[in-house]
Image (tube, rainbow, N blue to C red; front, side, top):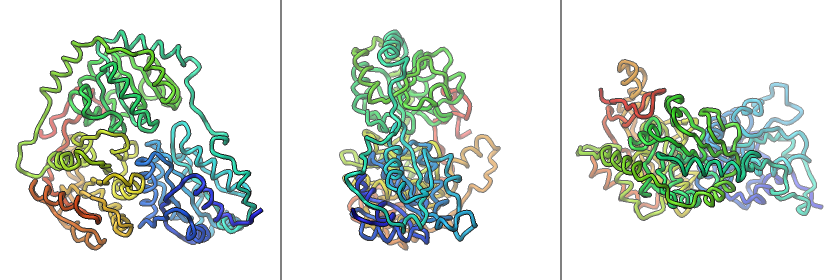
Length: 563
């Protein structure tokens, strides 16, 4: 039987679990692990910052559907992962974080860089633990991978003292349990469910006069977009998407109404407001989706499909809650509701809304809508993954980009993490090597983690990073404009930052665009380049995201954003 160190065992487990890339940053408490990574059969990507490593692992997981892995040392290295873990947790993304810890004989003595990361990360991980004996290292790591992607996915953190990394253990490949034999959760259709609850769902849908289906991020997580497409094509039910659900339904589907929620398309929000039945697939009814929760559910039958029991009835009371994996429930639903719904008056009303709420830009100035339409035209017939940051840029992208496939629109939804886009794009580049990766940020969010552009350059990634520069923290400024008497406190950033010079200092190619023609030319050059490229797209500070619903208001009450 072979003797190896704990650090070597970690690398072997990662390889056995099919890991092809890890993202991290070395430090004193993970030197043994990084020594073992030197001989690893997979790529080891050095981030500029541990937060970037966490977001990169997240972006990899979202783009690939596999578990992302990030590594950090003890103390500040571990705490720098927290924002990335919270982002993954709130969006149900499978990530395994491995942190170093001080040697066991130093724990509890306020040793250099000692931080109790297990306590710190408890609320933002699906499971976390510190390894106490070298014998428990391998089974705990394997359990972490199984748990990260089982049921409702999420991040897991394993804290490994340096003394455990250096300790010797017996490695017996034959005795390693495969993932499927480990004791992990499995979501099944609820006891009241199965065919009985789905037959009730069938009755409600077939009797509905004004049904709407809401596609959430759970559809993408469960890899059931094809099943959902079959259901909506058969029933011809009108469909809207949450922010996290973009890509779950092909945006060119004729009954697809677009984004719903605070910045949802008008036809989508009007359909939700006037529906008599709402079928929600894999969404937790966040406040940004529902607006006023009482009015959202008023005079409607709500049907909610979810894998997590805690989400049923949490935000909106469901008349029928179907608990279980969508991979089990959707095929059964297809068998029960296998006909076109007789709702022609409803479809005609929706068609009228769509015809009267379509807006087109008429300005010759560079705007966010022009940017998104240029991207749509450029990548119409190509594999592309868009990774967006948080703020106005995120909402403009969600409203105007044409997202046709799952895992091609990646964004921080639940946590709303500024700085997500660039490092997540690095991860996505490894998660989907066939697609061109396009990062979209605002000037504020880019400056938070923009140094990861250097990671893209060092790894030879042809990342296209678009910075929509309106010289302000646009979304906060928009709220100040509408709800705080135009008092723009700490949101006007000015023109003091040289994005082109910064990108060039990282080794990237960079362009500045001030007009539609300049942006189009820069985009064409970026597409032809084999290097990382940044395009600074300069737009007006006063451009607003519209439509918009004020927080807590009904979804059909739209704000005049230019008042």
